[in-house]
Image 1 (cartoon, rainbow, N blue to C red):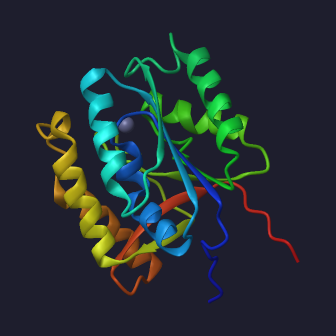
Image 2: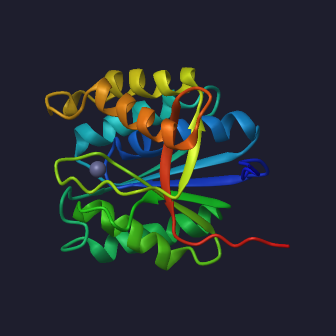
Length: 215
Ligand SMILES: [Zn+2]
């Protein structure tokens, strides 16, 4: 099989609705990109969050990628209200960060995600980033909206473990939720690893809505 490569990236933008979404949805992929692209700049945009969740986002972003500190932009908008009261502010923020980061790759929520804040991020990203490769990551949840990803990124076992250990260590506000457990995150990566025939057994899945192949 001829595989797509993650090389040659200069600027990567990850967009999440909530403080933990980027790490859950594409943490392993970000670790792989950072490993394969020395010097690549990373920008993380987290659109919602009160003081406690913004503090978690700051501490997490600073510690996640070995030797690389992403530029973190916190919107501070209201959790649960992005497509309603805060849509205009959210869209303005995505446009501002787009112009500042000029990314080669955008990682954000699936447009098919049933959480309103997540879906908003996917919709706005596709409105804002025409001509930029935009991959949609998945978040396991009560709504039961997981699909069949059409792009899989194998994740080394040490990266999969780092992601899960990091999530458990940095998001105290979420620990009481029944789904926020090591086996949830490892289990989903394990299933995607089977689909990817990953040597490590782990992978992350994305919806790639549009890919352009040059001759
Ligand atoms: Zn979320």
